[in-house]
Length: 144
Image 1 (cartoon, rainbow, N blue to C red):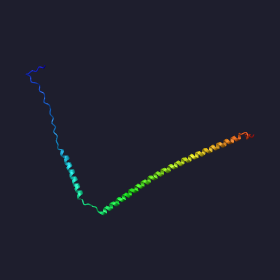
Image 2: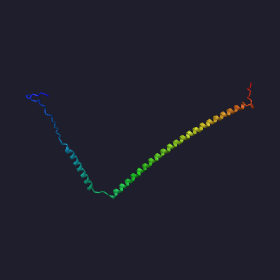
Image 3: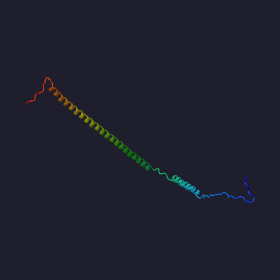
């Protein structure tokens, strides 16, 4: 148990702090103001489109169709030119490949012919040496 003197006043604690924040809401109307201005512009644009006289002049329609046809022809010609260019590039690539293959085949044939001629020369040399050393044909005596 604690002793408390009744003649001494109890210690005073300070009251808790209170914070008050004040927010000003002056910018809340700006959003509504911008939205209203956009709505007014939209109403004016719709009114302008509705009140504008229609210009369905047959000559203008015919000119527009002719321009569309010409644009289509130009695009078609460009597409055909691109296709032809691609075909020409493919043909050139194929011709180059064929020429390379023909060159390799010719080189191989030349190498085969050279080998065959070396083999034939070796056989001829061997067969003449065989004839010279045979018992029917004794080797020739060197002359002195």
